Amino acid sequence: MKYFDYAATCPISEEALQAYIKASREFFANTRSVHDAGSKADRLIEHCRERMAELLQVAAQGITFTSGGTESNLLALYALARAGKGKHIVISAGEHSSIHNVTTKLVEEEGYELSIVPMTKDGVVNLEKLKHVIREDTSFVSIQHVNADIGTIQPLETISEICQEKRVFLHSDCVQSFGKVKMDKVTSLVDSFSISSHKIYGPKGVGALYVKPSLSFTPFLPNVSHENGVRQGTLNTPGIAAFTTAAEMCLNKLEKHQAHIKRLKREFLASLKEAGEKAVGSEFESCVPSIGLCIHKIDGQHVMLEGNRRGYFFSTGSACQVGSGGPPKMLLSMGISEEEAKTFIRISFGVDQSLEDVQGLAECLNEVIRERKKAV
Image (cartoon, rainbow, N blue to C red; front, side):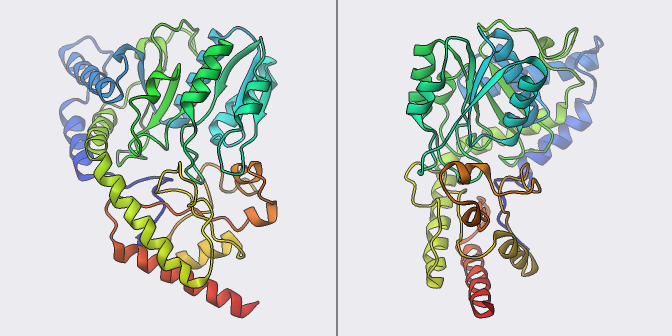
């Protein structure tokens, strides 16, 4: 089995797994319980909060632990909507489905107006159109840091300047960037952001939301006792401990890991060129190296299934969108036709893979391409 879908989820690292086991055994009490066992678990959570704050270079009181990126996005957008000055919201066309779903709910149930900013042919949000759509009654803007389908990095510094000039809040979904690119500057540019554990070799079902402590808002649900009233439900203490461990490992080795993944991508593209095909998404300068490959002329679903049959596992887009009945919205917004977008596959690399692994994947795809051409 050769796994190439790290953008969807990563296997848990040994260090994170051991942290999870230890916390499950020794810190199992409810953090809101007032006895000593509960206080012990609560101290571990607060230690994790402080450590994550150090890694992200933000104030610890702004961090809320959640069940993952989707919940973090939900809580963030509702917080900014409540704190904002009007009932108009702006997102990019390339946002994760969770952002689209939350904003749809705000429109349909609470009377908000929504503007969706298209992407350029280079996979970057159209900044001129962003400036144009922001209004006096705009409550917030939500622009993801790294696209989940092709890995383009959005110019958050410029976007932040636009939002500050217009006096609107800015949220960024950083699920695909955390652990892959440096975020020390990004965290100071936004009013809120979301991250997830299972994208960085931590356990599933854990994430975090950051909202600037200076921002006053009404929580999504009233009368909540956990996480300073921001998020309901008993905390996943072992998951949070493992998430923090995974974050430390990833950020401490970020440059080494990304250099390795860049080598894997270069080797893959060099080997894939033997088939005479072009990988779309790889030519963008501002792009996370582990995401964003597309092979044309053959239906992506066919390529994925043929790869799966040969023991190579990759996807046809974000796992939260696959099955929606259409190609990734990101590609369509870039001006790629629906017919061409249906040829999309997403290949994402991991730190534990070798050059031989990616050479094998390239040969697998070369073989699928040759067979398909002969059949046509």
